[in-house]
Length: 162
Image (tube, rainbow, N blue to C red; front, top):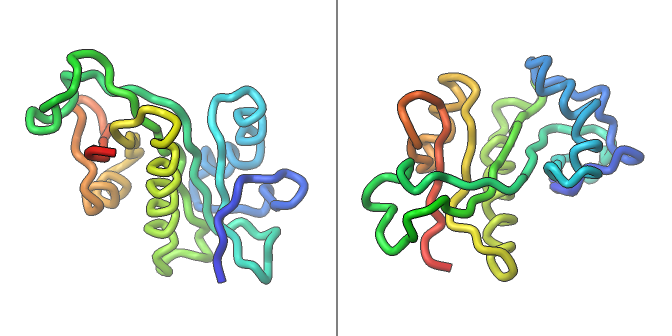
């Protein structure tokens, strides 16, 4: 059974995580805890209940905004003409040994569910991601994320009425 919980450096083995991308591995090992302490982002890890130290995947959440002009015209309806509050899903990664099990989708669903839960106390209109490459872009597009502009791989998912 899988569980997704907030990263705990005393409980989760960050050094053993390997998703095949050095920058993503290094982030989890060296920066994720610092970013939580400084209020920059919060990292959540996917583990199995019978191996709670082994990180199978992770994602981070942080506050963000999207310029009104970056939204598709249909998504602008009823919104003010200034930056729209959003939450950024950053650095979503799955370990090489865990690929092909749908864990990326599980992490994404959990992140969106967590964001939706915050809408009771915080204004959030969209989820934003920065796809690092074409494969990531394709992954997010499959789940309905829309392109913000043609000069970056930033995408957003409107959350609709709360």
